[in-house]
Image 1 (cartoon, rainbow, N blue to C red):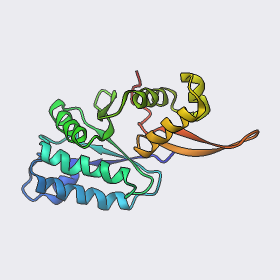
Image 2: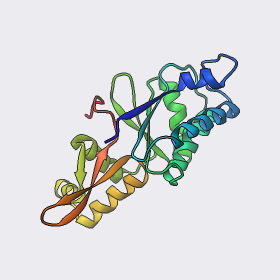
Image 3: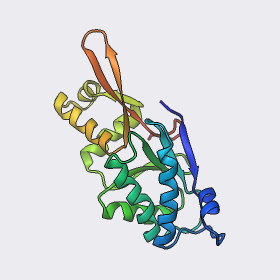
Length: 198
């Protein structure tokens, strides 16, 4: 697994915003920051897990949250950035609320963790995928057969659930060689190892 790459949003703001503000407000500001992030993402190798760290900024209004996070996640899920992953570090409840609303309105989901190193899914994720994701995060990684055994599912059902989470870029996927059965995909958590899985 490639090490997490942290993008400090406050440093990006300092570079691209000339007014010295620590607040992310207006759609124009959001567009400028998103385009800067896209330029950085393009340079990352496939498999990269990028943490967008919002910890040292002030307000994030809805229009900025929509312009940055909703558009980034939409394009990520459409495959525009390749096989890469985005998670957020955000603790401020108001910031989190505006990001969540922006994701919910587009029926998107993204992983977030805060200063207390506990995680949550922001946005919309149906119950069975949330249950499946929770098992992956608890185990660290799992195969379709392992999930089928754990959740008492048919192998096709567990494979479909894992594939759907992978397509949403909420878990990563690698291929493993098996002595007896050839190959299998293994799905892994994209959260940093210090994040608490309850």
